[in-house]
Image (cartoon, rainbow, N blue to C red; front, side):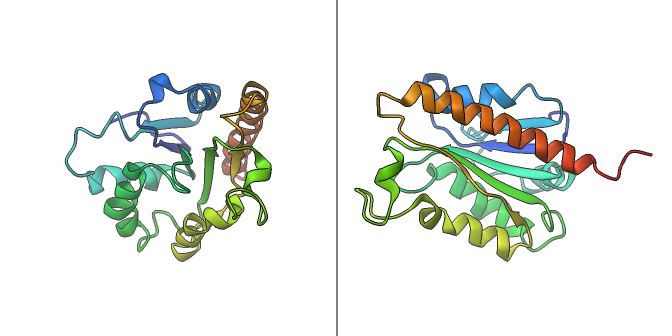
Length: 185
């Protein structure tokens, strides 16, 4: 798990990233940006429990945290929840996360219109992502507007992935640049 500790830490929670189209394209777009460190939780999952001391150092050294995952049953895959329970619960009570941006990047099978109050899924993605926003606020982090790439099960999937990847790259670069503000002597 030891990587160069960089400024933006991305916790990738995808149970099968090698077979993924959307999340793989998204992470490939940002993983080589200088200042980004990607930790694929499912590749680290041989561990029975997450090492809180190691994660404390990783998150303490980060200037921003991103959760990236496919939207499964209106939430993230279970390993991100396990990480939150074992690591974030501890970190939320420390200065390690205070003031740092937290952003969610997710993909959905359904189109945008399905995630409206009158849509097929009945709730907006903002409503469904509220627990992540609540945990950010509770721990003193700065909630960032999520990136939601809709319609992976539609004919527009390729176009939506390309548009989402471009936005993701822009937002990550903004997070990196904003964390460097005031550090140029």
